[in-house]
Length: 415
Ligand code: SF4
Image 1 (cartoon, rainbow, N blue to C red):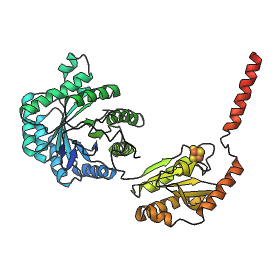
Image 2 (image 1 turned 120 degrees about the vertical axis):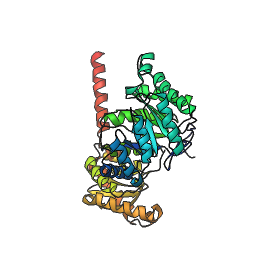
Image 3 (image 1 turned 60 degrees about the vertical axis):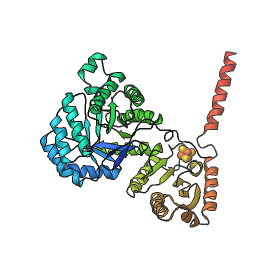
Image 4 (image 1 turned 180 degrees about the vertical axis):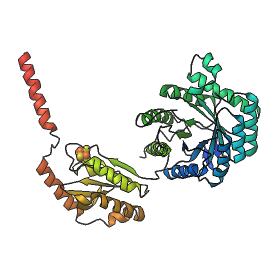
């Protein structure tokens, strides 16, 4: 029976908007966003970074538009960009209008610092004329001062009210081409705000934990917030706000969505055992070498590196391809079936070569091309390893016997 993925079904139904050619909401695949860190005025450096982000799997990219030179940079970047560009606007209405002139595919307005209703409505009207969507980007750190005062701080209610106030202005000019974010660096606050917002509107939601910080803590905070909401069917597009190269933000976003089954795998998914007393190789080193070599190939495969042949091929039988360490040998397996036994020093090399053949020829063909003697050679190697190391290589049974003796002795002493 097919397993139900509760991350993909049911998802909260939102209206669909388009950021350039990329659909957001309305059942479209959840998209990954990031933001350039170059000066937007430096169009060549910004385009180079956008190409890197696109290569890593980014769907939509945001660039700051904070001064006239940045808007001019956007005019040069937009026609050459492989990704739709959203201009990030704070404080200055004229920068929003200039970005529209530059031809951007979307705007992000911060209601906390762009506060004049007439200006906001002017931008909405201009965006509407051009078919450009706007993100209402509420941020707990730059919440409208009136709301901060009203709620005595940045509460979920305050964040949602800020978004709803902006949406009401847009509606006055009949503009609904809107997605919304209510980000905070505090994960429970951000989660609650999005939950409330998703009850109040059917606009697509852009998820993020703002200023999450550098990895690994930043990755964990962002994942905690974003994944919690995705599990509840909330969220149409995501951004990891890390203090790191933006390529890392995209990799994190893609990895999360692929792991949850919300996006097709487009690259490598390397799984590796955590290693233990049975390991016949340095799993961390071999997995690192395999990852480096395989990532360069950009193949959509799940590949396993397992420290021993005792449990390895069985535990990783769902992987497309894997290798497990035997007695100075590597057991290469496809979908859990041993196809070849290779010398230990060639494990990574053979794994990479097989990955290329597997991607080119498919599972059936590669299983058919298996070395006929591989399974028996692997079985012999495995039983030799058992004899050499014993069944209990982790010495668990020995330890349990010692625990029992110790507990028994204590009991007798106390009795
Ligand atoms: S039993 Fe083998 S596959 Fe499992 S963690 Fe230990 S070394 Fe890795």
